[in-house]
Image (cartoon, rainbow, N blue to C red; front, side, top):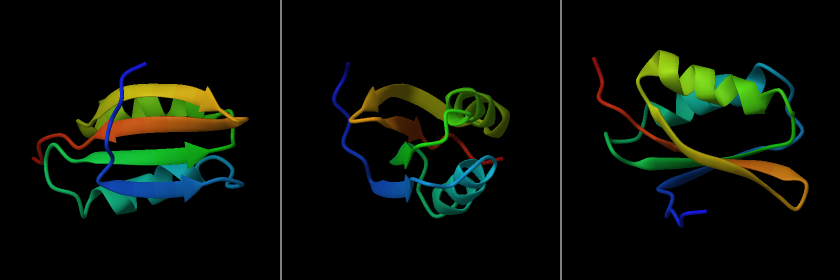
Length: 81
């Protein structure tokens, strides 16, 4: 597991699909290309949702893991169209 330093943290704990992805989309818009968004989620649907969302939006899922019963995702903002 690599160590990443996030530029922004989004705690989406307790939110159900699709809200973690919706909120992440709003937050990542304010980041610069290459910056990292750390997302904490509890909805297990996020395991499939975030990789698909990152791929669809041109962002990069650097990694995800489970920590203390929560899901932690690191997403690097990609180039804007």
